[in-house]
Image 1 (tube, helix red, strand yellow):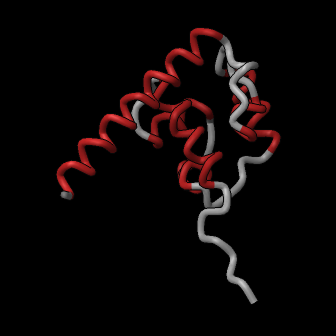
Image 2: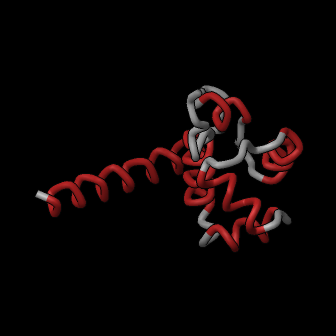
Length: 107
């Protein structure tokens, strides 16, 4: 019998992290407070250990201009607003650069 993965929603959590960084709302605790979410629940969403429920995604749609649930669930960017997409892509570039620096240091 196969064991359940510890972080079955990791990709969704990674996109939530990118959204938080793109929104410049500080650490997860500050973003959770901004959204009115429980901090421990938010942490579980961002790590990917729990799926983000539909009601929370609807709330993101109302609170974040340019947000599209299909990006969060499936990674589809075409529904994102231009400005939000640009900020998310900038955060992805920062993360990729940091990852490359970390790899060079490990060698």
